[in-house]
Image: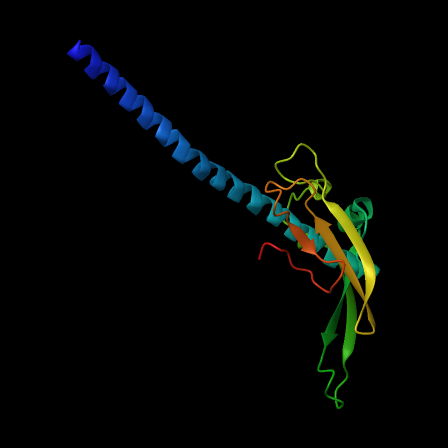
Length: 173
């Protein structure tokens, strides 16, 4: 009987130790997974910001739909004005040359623009994209906002930009 109780308590102690290990490990594992998801989503939002800046360079405003943003980034070019000489020196001739660079070159090689609107680690969820013009201290300013519609942390959705103030940074910084 004494041997039976020793074996039973040993098995019970091992089972409790394993259970305790799993309970402690689960939040740590979840936190690590959330960090990976957050990094992927913030990287995608930063790519959207780069695309919006390029779109504004071409069109003069921010895009408020994904199709036009993706199309412009894939196929349009930005004009770059090259200055030869010193424009402040009136004794020498200054010339200007306009060059055109494809927007696609602002992104890494093999970048998939069609995936720009999709939220990583979701089954096809799409970021909400908004753009408008607001009046800030008497000046009309173009603004945009990109919102995570399926946040991995429902209490803290990631947002890039703002529709109420001039802000092109994300709320994760």
